[in-house]
Image 1 (cartoon, rainbow over the protein chains, first blue to last red):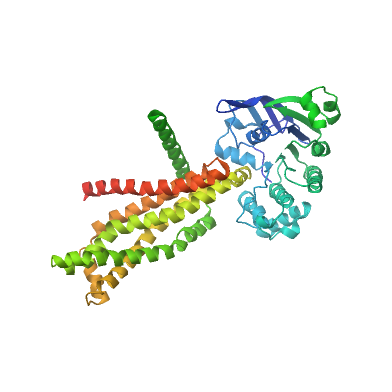
Image 2: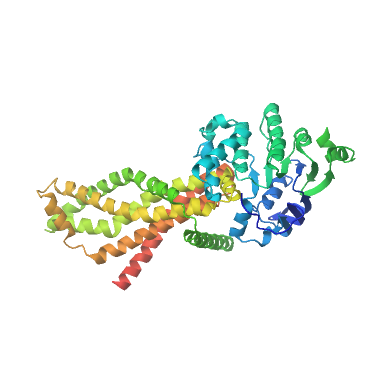
Length: 250
Length: 253
């Protein structure tokens, strides 16, 4: 939908030696990772290990103290507000609680970013696009509902639909299954996989749920206390003799 | 201790200045959020009419009832309409209306933006390519700046009616004659500085309330703190601006 401002890029996202402090506390320690354009990368870690801060740095919602982050070839640390805003149209972000605008219906939540970023579309076309995305996340019946009327799982689906409506090239998921029952969580993980196939997006999923990670990940990273402990596929990680890593598999 | 507090105050002042500069910069950048701006005019203006009406009417009534006996003692009862009306349009009307406005609108803006911040709705706007400064802050600041002067004019008018009711409790006078007498000593030099300062009151109520709500970062506790400090800061700014405005008016006129 929107043109990617960067030129050539090998990875959709590339982080090189990123460090981040909150006061004296170092929350990210020398983080380096890459994400290919057709990949689902899952970042596993216990609460408070800096996973959410990491993806917020990628989306430009948090600043970082040193290192470099490239999103589609653009060094986001060197971009001004307006350039970053343009780039963000290609990044989707699903927040933990959905972050739906509580004064708007589900339909209005989806139309809100569309009206501001897809000015070439007619109203009818926007409406069709909203319906199409709502159907794909199985939420078309909740189109006219307010966020307060939705369950936790529905809120996450609506949040994902709002992200998808802009057809992003990469989606960042912040704990998509937290607070959901196992059945709903299973539904969300299947949805994430189907979104990747249908919309051809790359994604980084932050979670502490190994069962969910196994379903959705092409590759996994395990984080602890702000640093990357291990990286690889499910079977490779399972073989590693490390107490913290073992903890996720048990 | 004092040094720490001073340091904190100066940092906060710098942050408010940066926030204000950013807001002003976004006012002139396209796209303009007309719909939200109109909605905010309705929210901050129309929805304040009830409170302003009651307060302004009572203010005019009480002021007249309390002033009249003293003036009568000096044989200057006929000056009551002029004196009350002058006090209302120069000082009491703008300041009292602005204080009520700060309480009602400032708290609403502080609570609304801070709860949007803690539920990540503002972050969600940012990542979907929408400028929250433009959509949330600019529209609210412009609405408070433009609506407060109208509300003050309206409050002045209702205070005049209240004053008439208070005056006619002890005297007989027609409404038109009362209004003519009230306006007898009112000149543009009284009205213009009072009007200019209401625009400034409105701007500062908007900007400080938005700043407090927009920059909150302490979860649910932060919502309460932001709401509270939005009202306190806005109210305090009204008195400081009023003090400066009086000095400037005295120098110029």
